[in-house]
Image (tube, rainbow, N blue to C red):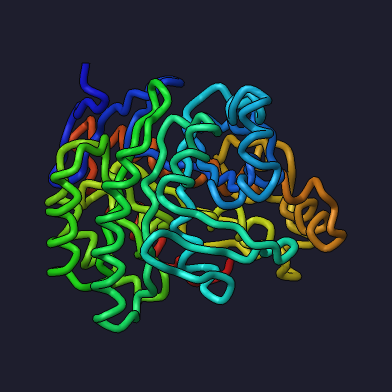
Length: 370
């Protein structure tokens, strides 16, 4: 039985089902980010109520604390965090980019200085895949080198070649039963290099492929151009756009044929007082909300909107009450999860173009705070 079933297409957009050891995942899908085995401010029960199908954890962070052996001895990541559904783990390759001032890169792997206590840690393709095996994730990402979007050509070419070599080494590591493995296509914003790297990785026996190294500083329109060209050329199996992004970015990716997305934006922005609504973003810190009896978004069925007013949320935010972070995070994740659920329904109905146009028309004020 194939691990990925394509149910429908509408233009370039796709609706499918990804089969994992912990259940089927209907695509397009947004994956809440639980870097350290926790989606910040939420319980696994909260995520279940929101209808999340799959969440993301991070190899580097979980290796630092509590440690892969601890998670393995507790029965694996699913049991450790009481999450019975699918989990994808990033290999730590993104930290090659994000912790550039704390790491030393060589052909064999990367040596990091911990952001927690400065201690030295080593990740290689073999170590990264071994950690993900111990964590017991459903999808393990190959270890890669993520270069900056403005990297010089020589650095970009080096990262591409090294990522290919590391991909083969990642695949050579024994995997636990049922764990899928995805490769990561690099190449910055250079379409020719992206296309060439895709051709290399497509020859390797990965269960799916991801586009990495996007949304790391380049203008959104450039990222959209790269995704629009490269995504349709990816193999028919699951396609994943890593770490991206705004609702507009996600709809653009879906239109190009991307199936899976993750981003810290809904959770991080919630903690900073920014709530996603149709037609813009609501800044709960604005004084006008202190006496506002309306919910964050009328018609939204999430716990936050069903029970509480903007005035109450504004009070919690200014008082730095912990409840604010939970309620705001619930709302923002509901917005993102509904976005991809709605896209799937539209693809199945053959109406995705209208769905996307309607959402973007309402969202043209995306950068305006309401």
